[in-house]
Length: 285
Image (tube, rainbow, N blue to C red):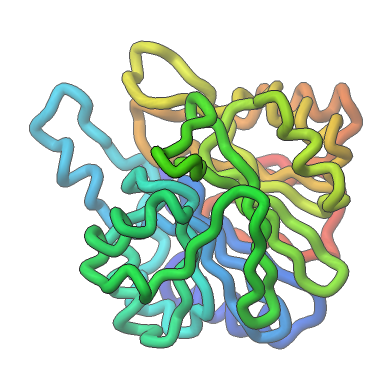
């Protein structure tokens, strides 16, 4: 079992310290979950902070065996202003994570794809009107953060019967900063055109790739994440969506090799580790 860089009380203390500092700060919480703090406000992107999938699949032929210890009980994150879900898969829309978060943060805003609004409401046992929703090409400002929705392809660009995208990524802009959380995605025609106007400072991209034997939808390989960072001229790349389940993981090695060859900066975070906007260069484990 992988032990987080910091967890529980140590993680909370680091968040509290960082929230008093200049710049923005970002923590990887495992899988595709990230906490972003800027000027005292906190945005939580696609958190998975439970064992719900391990419990669900324990007696099946596709067990979801956890690789990394849970970094924090979501009920302890009582300072979250805004949380997102990029799509309806449980590691991105987890009731066992979001319901305790809501209890700890009754006024917290929840943003989901418009195509998934009713589904998300039923999963979270909420009225659909309690959720904020976006489709690709739309934007929403909540507090300090403006979310811009872009399509994601997991494995394909899928739309519902109203033409709304089933999978999204979010570009988040605040002050002069622009960061991209892709959700689960592959490369597709139009992705570069969607990202280039934002002049991205940082992108959080999955690197677990895809393999038929896993029997789940795939994601970018490390080499593809590096290519996207180079073509979209992204200043810093932070990999994610690995080291959570034994059947669906990769290492950052390919990403680091390809990024170095392309001259792109990468920060590889341990679960619970912080990236601050004052940092630069390449961090390896």
